[in-house]
Image (cartoon, rainbow, N blue to C red; front, side, top):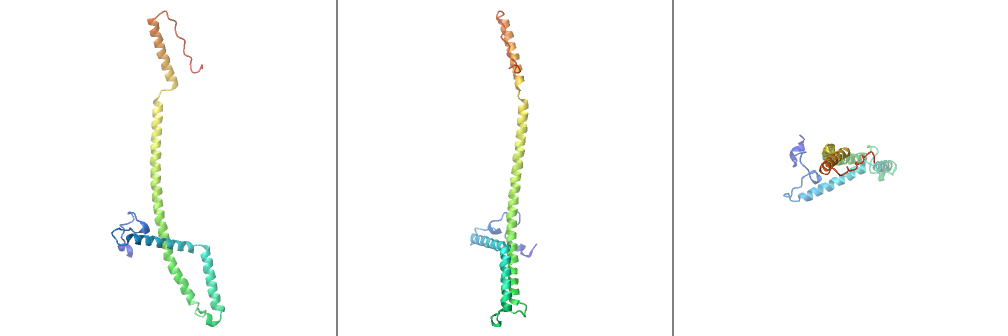
Length: 192
């Protein structure tokens, strides 16, 4: 457990978090403002981290350092503000300060991206579960339809049954009225 673990207000990773990674409680005075401020700071830090990862930032930082070194090396002595004899101490301190702020800002941006990725992965997992359930349901329905169709009589079976019924009717009519001529045969499906 980290040193800061005991100061956390959220119950853990299994509980949902609201804006800015901290639950805004309506009972807290200014809870929503604090959450909105945290979100604003998070977006600002992501913008800074995104800007630091561009070639333009490296180019501007390089030009800045070159101008600093040239100015403090070639300008007249009273106009210099950083001594080359001391190894450009002010420039070193300035770059160290920039690095000390850049690292936490980049980590904050990465943490926010990890939170977004975690939510996206969870949504993808839920969507995949729904798709799997839908696919299994459709597969069961297709099997049920195949079984139902297999039990249905086909065209040849129905025609044979109709011919048998027609023959029975003709036999009954022949018994009732022996002088009546027999009906014509119904042509086969192959003969049509």
